Length: 435
Image: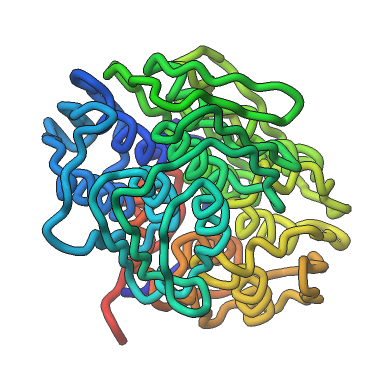
């Protein structure tokens, strides 16, 4: 599957985007180990979250899909998971693999976590190391990649772990293992990362303490099922925001978007580049801040992206690369080496894609300098990465000629209905079969 993108006239519109992927993953996992029923509204039915759902069902949890976006979970309690009869295939989802590894590290039964070709090449040593310090027995391939073989019957003990680099997934894996550990488990992060795990644990009755970058919990706490309302995903909304900013004259409202302060780096960076982005109708929805985001077309300018904002926008850098390419002057990104071990090497993939569209990019080991210019037409590769595919598609809407983006099936992992959503604001993005 590929995208054919034609120069487009993005216009005024009010749109919604699918539910937050990070929150949907966590609601499935925590609802499964809670006591009682958890009902999720706004669930993201992307392939990544469906892989998590299938994994939890394989662990003996009764999960029913009531509608496209409503899920009912009958929790089995902290110690009610059952041994799976086969390997747990987590598809393309690094979030699912890392967090579920934390959940399973302290179980009485053994398990094996696998994934697709892309996930099988992603680094897992970053979670294996702290989980082993807690007493877990986890084996991987010799280079620290999946599959992960987790031995059961290990007695975990609480630790304090200083994260060597900011990572919400590693933090969450350690905290989830900490539920099964004796004593207190704590994590200190060098920079603030998304805190959906801590917020949802709190909403399910777990006491989580936070102080000066240190997050702690006492092992053995029971979770209680509850209602979870999943806000629209800011990462998905960022593609609509980008399309509106780059258009000649557009005023677009994106409703009910999660604006957790650990996730809003993309908004701050785009505003710093001159983007006209405002938040309204602020409210708290199930412990998560939510707002309507209004975006008006803007003339963007380049500059240095503050390193402090990197961890708050780590998934949105492909969007920011395109914004920088359309801005005047040059934009300097640094401290983003983490992007090299995502679904693809996102620094290399975006640099290659933008160069193919006529933009000068100077790549470095942990960043890039993007020189603003005019997108030309051409053919680019997504490298099987959903965020690369969607970001380059938005670039195509303001290119001088049509753009073909190859291998985009992965978009369904996070943004099912992407083409239809973008069409509602005037973007001409069409899926086409192999050519």
